[in-house]
Image (cartoon, rainbow, N blue to C red; front, top):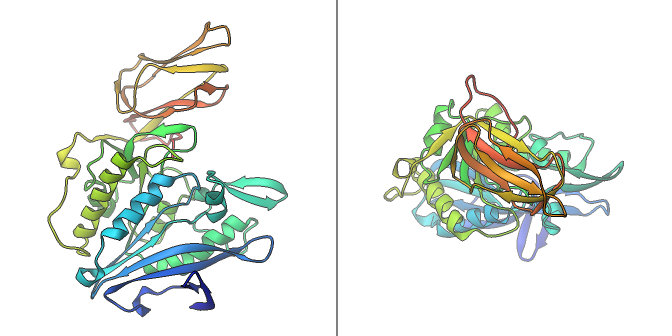
Amino acid sequence: MYAGDVIQGKKVIRALDVNDLEPGRKHLLYFEGVQMPTGQHWYVSVTVAKGAKPGKRGVLVSGVHGDEMSSVHTVQTVMNQLNPAEMSGTVTAVTDVSRPAMEGMQRRWPNSGRGADLVDMNREWPGNENGATAASRHAWLLFNRLLQPNADFAIDFHTGTTGFDVTAFNLGGMDVPEVKAMLDLYPVGQIFDNHVYPGVLHNAFLDVGIPAFTPEIGAARVLNLEMIKLFVEGTMNVLKHHGIVVGPMGRTGSDVRVFVGDSAFPIIAVQGGLVEHLVKLNDKVESGQKVAIQRNSFGEVVAEYTSSVAGEVTGQRSEAMAEPGNPLTFILFNKSPPGSESYPE
């Protein structure tokens, strides 16, 4: 459904059915999202690689949070490797879902409702056509007119948030066989086997029967090129798994020592001051092991932090200072029965 507008040579659409597109080539489009306060629209970049032959339809999403640059670069790199003339099926990529957040490279959507507000778009899916925030309405437009109608499977790429670094890991429910099959195809060190919060995009896909999961690619606001390579390799494996592209599989989870945990234990600051980490990302820790200390302005140690569980470090605060309530470390571990702790998404 064309809007009749052209921006920088790219047509603007209000809805998409990839079956309507010419096969054997790439299509660059803008999707017309929700309106700004000025009445103009937030436009979302859409790249469709339409294979010469029919096949599965994959959707790759990034930019749900505006500070997650490695996720965007990962999707761009995958799309640049695709040759539609040799493909079966379609890959649709969206690289800047939360446009106003990306303009300021900040995590949340700046909403001008009842005064200034910041909305986490990854709590808004599948959105609400008549929602109380622009972000909720934007999510509804994208999910119902762009993403869901063109997906047989979906991958929603993220990184850690600003001020918090994470390992290369995948997040998804391994109780869903189609999801587990895709998670196993990534050569990354950790899998967080958990469905986590309502309102995240991969759960909105699962709720309508579309297998989906979330890769997490290191720190926000930077490009981690080494981690990006791992997720490009894994995503290409997924496309081969679904028959969209052909060729030998790259490295998978069986080629690395993947640690699988179903919970993330948060270690929270109880004091203000400088933080010194005593462990690194991916380190194994034991229950009772000291993982961080904190010093006040005189250099005195005011807090020592230990892990209450055995597992692997999956996330750490990257800011040098913390105040009470800030997460300092997350430990990926196995809880029986499985739990639902917070995690550094």
